[in-house]
View 1 (tube, rainbow, N blue to C red):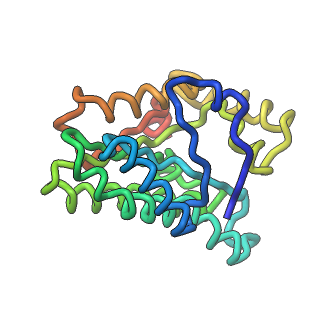
View 2: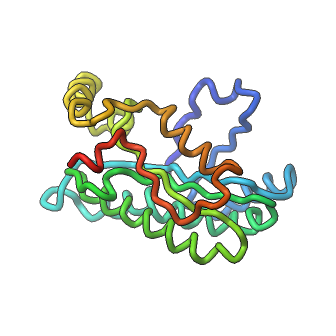
Length: 213
C-alpha cells in the first residue's frame, strides 16, 4: 500500500539490516519470513509500529480513510504477527511489542486513529492470552505526544502549525513533552529479559497525561 523511501541514516547503521516491503502484500511477508529464517532461523522480537493518522471526526471522515487507518494501524499488525509467528515460536525468549497510543484511552479529534489504537490494545491482550502457551510475551506501548513529526509526515499539519501545537500540548503534560527515546526505552525494556514476567500489559508512556485528564 505504501512505499516510502528509507530514512537516509538506516543503510549506514551496522546494527540494522533494512528490508522494505508492504505489510499487506503476502509475497513481501513471505519474502521477509524467508530472509529471517535463512539468516537466523528464529525471531526473538517483533515491534508492530506502522501508523497513519487523519485529523477528521465522524462528520468529515470518508469511509476510505477510515478503512485505510484500520488497515495500517490494526490489520497490518495482525497480518505481520500471524505470518512471523512460526519464527517467534523458535525463539527461547520471544516478545512482541505493539505501538498503540494514548489515544486508545483519551479520544482525540481523529476518530479513526483513536478507534484503531483501542483495537490495538485489545489485539495485544487477546494475542497475549492465546500465545502464553508458547511463552511468547505480547505487550503494547502507548505513547503520549512526543516531538516525532508524525503529524507533519502524514500531512495533518504544516511544520509551523505543528510546532505551535506541541508548545500548547506540552503544558498539559505533568512531566512535559516526551522524546522518541522515551518510547524506545519502553520498547527495549519490554523486549528484554528484565520483562520476562510481563505479558498482556498496556504500558502508558505519556508523562502522566492519562492520569491528569
